[in-house]
Length: 433
Ligand code: UGA
Picture 1: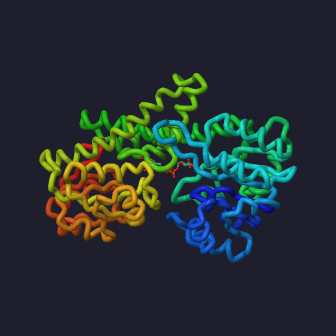
Picture 2: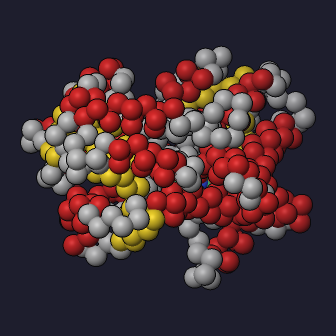
Picture 3: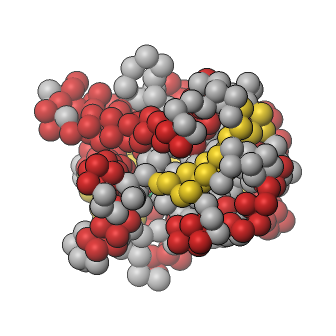
């Protein structure tokens, strides 16, 4: 099938390459020339495991092209909208400028019978508004939210947990067309739920709101554990055995960041207020506050172990990305903590396997080093803020030979506490004695 994908950021680039892998003929379109050049050369402008290989593989088939010309969408049967919906500056609401611009750019090139498929995360009601304009051009609109996680983006696109198709009332053709696009995964038994447009839009934000709530729930338990001497990781293991609760997304620590969870819960609250149901989502404001409090607590802990003052103390920061296997530092709790420690006068030396360049753009004042050992050398305290495998696997005895002070703060509850203590470290973590 001929497919266009408008917006070649995280979501769109992965979607375009994955659709080509499935055998479709795909053009990825974006206004950013540099991005398009890099993608066409098989070099994604961000870090995502497996994506360079997938771009090269799909590019070699001749089925994947990238362009800055919206006119290239003409002739495709299905047009995916995969542009970003960031938080508006100075507001909780989502900025729909890019979605509107994508539709504006597409409208002159639509043919009757084409299907426009929204994948971007939007406030409920957006699709109904866009549908009118698209129908006026003789085409139709469906909403097919994306649930991909950074770091697992290709797997989540090719073999998702489920498909959700939001279709307009009485449209009998959109679902069969999407079935054709996703035939491979559907034949493997992936569940598919067909809904109206509003439900599909809500499914996405509800899923992210639930995940954020789950993380903040366990971090709230960590706050209680801290004043009672209880251990939040054992608590998570114990409640997680109840299948109704489940252990996944119950890892306490510095909390959630990234380009999705924080802005999605805020955008959801803003939309609820517009709809007059702000009371229903009031709890998300606590979810946000609990999450942000973890960062402050981490900084306090560093001050505490360094005898009440971090000024002039050398702190090795391991990890800057919002989660491992990513170079993304949008709303990253790790980068935030590193910057706050530096503001307090600490001599921060930060490292991350992938996120140094992205961090430098936001916080040029911090000192970054590529090499973990260089970051550790001479440190008065070691702070682990992103649970990269290479940090989880550090040998505490060897690390001790590099530092000046044997204080380790585990911001992600990812180190083997007993092993570090046995090697002579003063180990501290959030929510654990
Ligand atoms: C999230 C959702 O998981 C995806 O399903 C969704 O498609 C995506 O947003 C999106 O809206 O596009 P992502 O932002 O890639 O995906 O990251 P997650 O894996 O959800 O992690 C989010 C944050 O929560 C990270 O900072 C992570 O460190 C933190 N986290 C996660 C915890 O603090 N504890 C946990 O137990 C799990």
